[in-house]
Image (cartoon, rainbow over the protein chains, first blue to last red):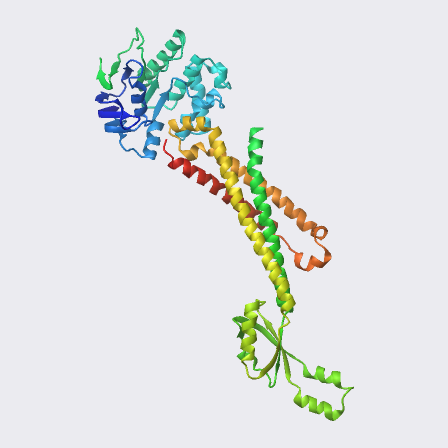
Length: 220
Length: 272
């Protein structure tokens, strides 16, 4: 699913955030990327969806090489993955079901089918009673559930999550972990999560990548 | 409410531009109408010593000769019948030259008229030429000048419309930059993200066209109230409403999409 060979990442030419990265994430893996704040976890995740370009090395996501990737190929890659952000990134002027419909519509599904799938997802995350609500009318935990539903609505092969529980209380965090675990176990989606705190008693085999001084290590 | 506000801000430059185009159409139609009228009325009179060989004169000054009509000499002689003796009339008949009216296919410009005069003067049998063109030419030149000025104004207004619409599109993109960024992260193209603004400009083009077409219908039904009777001859313009509507809609769509395309291209080449 993800193959990284000697990858170097930086926002400017002088200071590298990731100095060396070699790892391999297989299909259906559940992966945590850990490390202390400012070590480059989010930068590494951003490189997976082309939000930051590679300085050196090779990075392959779902058989698409991200080195010098064209805009068209990058759009194609982004359509094939789901992303969950710490700040949810929901479109505030759209209802929650419209937000879930977004990746489906971008992938060319009809409005009817997308709406049906959005309702199905709302049912799955137990927010079907909130149809027609706007994100601002929901709690942080509920908004993040919508973000997870949006990320898996089009049944992608890969879901990337950047600190998905960073802003949530323990209960809401557990709901999000369960949703991501379910996506991995039941739908066979590869899940890569950036977090500074791996949840205890996760109850699922996972791979753990850690970043220290810009170098990526495989912990388990 | 916001949609209405956006619609109005797109419609104003479009309506201004379409009005300018309609005024240009009216002025140039008036010029064409006047041109046609003076072309039908206008003829050059030539006086020749010998009968003119008409087939030798199929074009002059680069303009095709439509017809050459000889002026009946007997009419001239008849007008002198009571004032001259029989012998004098006979003498006059022998000495009276030949008169012709030359009708042209197109009303000549001043420079073309100079060439025509020169070409006719070069013909040995012709010894007198009268063009009567001065008055016609002045009015025609004035009308042509007004049409050109209106056209220049139309181009300026169209450019301003493009600038104003581009500005509106830029504002829209700024207002929705968060939404566009989220859509982009999900693999949407700039064109996909711009769908609402494309739809908005499409509706604006339809609305603007409808407003201007209503104006044209009102104008063509009440032109006598706007123009005085003296101007009736040249302002008797008949609009093909359907054709005008299609023309106006095509132009407003073209201007809108050119503006959007410009902004989109700028955004597309801008790095993330």
